[in-house]
Image 1 (cartoon, one colour):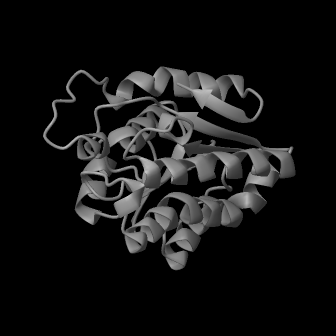
Image 2 (cartoon, helix red, strand yellow; image 1 turned 180 degrees about the vertical axis):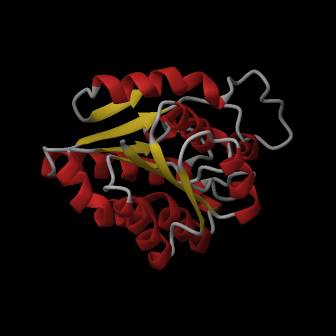
Length: 221
């Protein structure tokens, strides 16, 4: 049975992907910062799931995630989904607080790379895949998205370089588009985002990605 680590799996896109993979027969190791939310999410997943609350910026927690996957046979798929938006409403770069920007990069860039580094041994052995969740803010200069967008741009470049350095793996920067999630609502405080599709709508495209295993690169769901 294939094994996936999915970070930030208590809600939104992470939960939708976890539900879809669980229903498809994957064994999962999932995490989220909120223990209660993660416990509720775990109850929605039909298959075997190891749920580990914790912060992806914590080295001990990252090691715990990989160790749990290794006990199941090693990582076949790593989904780096956990992330933070930054301030809401989002400030322009001229007024962006640098201490907050450091935290945005810590969560969105450094933590996924650190978790990938830990998982590489079993990913290599299993011929696995890394899916780094990104955004069109990584490639388009939206006003006010300098913190989050530049962090996701860094993730996309890391994905490209990792793919070049690890030709035995698939490394995808996966852009799910604008979805009706809590983070997206934080990006547009006070606005109605009910016209955005629910996260579950991109699940069929994600499952096709895993089935088809295209070459490493940027993928728009």
